Length: 110
Image (cartoon, rainbow, N blue to C red; front, side, top):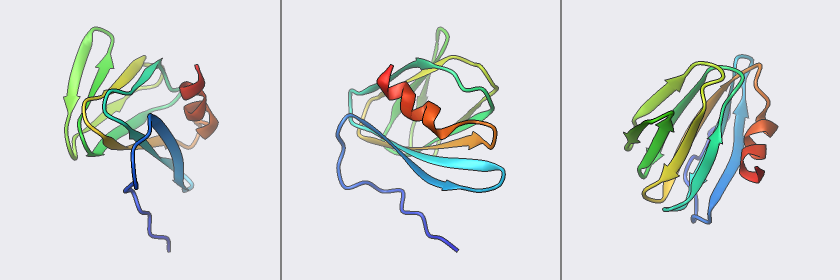
């Protein structure tokens, strides 16, 4: 058994932390300082994104979805999307077992 602490002590840009990996899913915590962004990118497998605190704009093509606390969005593979933090935010990202966690870290460096 493992208890996962999703909270953060402070916000500084965009930070990505691998929280846990099970047989079928990988759980990632993304903390985003208000005003920070994750540029457009896509994932090779299905993903689910849930806002645990704060508020973000989640863009898919020309559509922008405002996600508030506990809102969740799911995407099919290879759908381009981007994130913009309207407030300091903590986000849960669930990846499929076929996705590579290092790809998420790479989004920050692109």
